[in-house]
Image 1 (cartoon, rainbow, N blue to C red):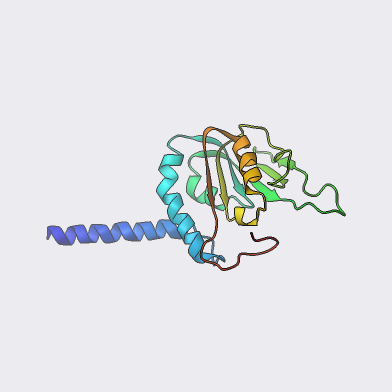
Image 2: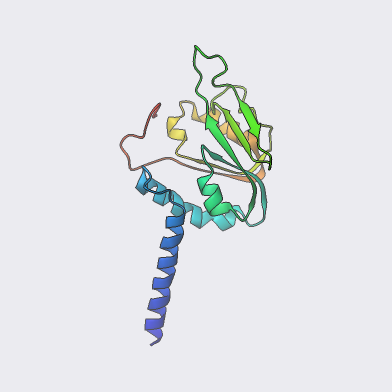
Length: 173
């Protein structure tokens, strides 16, 4: 009887873990295996990363993981979008920002810009940067730029796809 109860408890735990992973997955995403691994990692580190309420949190392109995994701890969910430099459009690649009525900010620019991201230093408690660095030709500059905008004691969570032979345009390093 005791063994059966433990077995059932283990099944319940696995089912709830699987459900938690499913909640952290976009519907029918590309990179399904890599995104599942990222969701698993987020579940593993979430309590360590956010043992207390956080202020500003940033994610690339859309705050999907922030909203799904850190909704109860982040005060603001900010977004960073890539703006590729282009010789015919001198403002492309330059940093910019729009702040919405309730405090959410949308930043844009180039992670590899020599002058940084156009974001004040020590702004974020948490930065999620999944599936970005495989597109970055100067990763050490990009890391310095991220570290500059991270608050002391904050966390950066980043991931790169490992199971796809090739991962998307415009650049794949």
